[in-house]
Image (cartoon, rainbow, N blue to C red; front, side, top):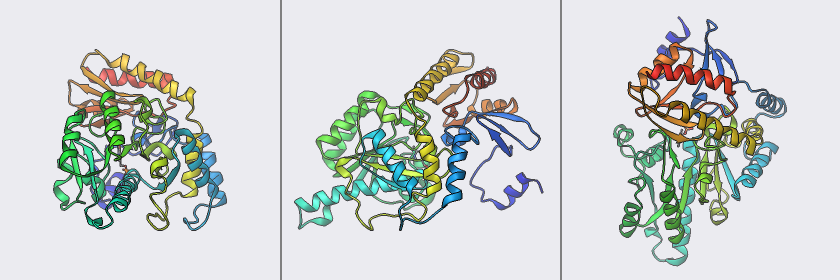
Length: 394
Ligand SMILES: *Cc1c(COP(=O)(O)O)cnc(C)c1O
């Protein structure tokens, strides 16, 4: 049996995989078993921030594996503490909770918002504790994860249908329509608002700056916890360390994962001064969360996301936008930094298949071709990939 046949027989059929097996790679180039090379324009869905088998990353990981690979959260380990410090220094946040994935990072963020609202309510209304606000408002067309709670948060009906009942207490409003949110607040007690600054799975759609600022003003005026889901947009992807930094706001809670540890599982929920002490002993936990190997990997990634790298991300972004805007077979280009969605005249899946034949791996998001290359993709490799993709769009 080939690997592809074995996988199809034994692995749960939840993924419609491309008919390619990847055995190795270096940087932004990966290889199949026959040695055919592909330029990787998806980086494992925005995960391998510095590409495949990056040397500095590898060294950080192997060094930590040789020291201690796991100790549980009952003991202190250096990478966990160091990474939390680095994330707080980069953002001004005060505390970090570590988990293993984006969905888990959002679960924690939601718990923080609900507990903040409940604690505050209990102070003011000690006799009516049961009627504390719990509703979390998210946006239509959003994506926040696959657990039953983060599915409830996800504002796309087709994700909901098969798994009812989902966690209650989630409502969805139209993006870029602040009135819908403020009107809802007249009828429902809101504990938190969660947004993606650029809707990734929803089609690589940046929200309006005015809207993001209006959400921040509204949540501040009403002491509602504002969560920014930076699972896909975070860790340098948009040309700033976190995407919210492009929009002139500071949220109360930031959740992130994907590119944080450069290819190992790690989620992080960052808490601002206001909510830093909401979670106390026993309020939340994770066996693997803050694993020393994942955290050492993340330290090596985060320490390299400096102004110079972020400016290179912006420069490569401009290059991609210029290459595709107005190109034959391209209807529009949207996104931020190295998170780009190209609406093509041909169906996106057809363009992606053509690219794969010609040695370039791309993603889709809704009806778009989505590009999420490694942050350090060399310019000459990017140029080659863009030429292939442009050809496939025609
Ligand atoms: C990928 C993603 C998630 C889910 O992350 P997992 O690690 O797959 O749980 C959540 N939110 C956003 C915005 C994402 O892009």
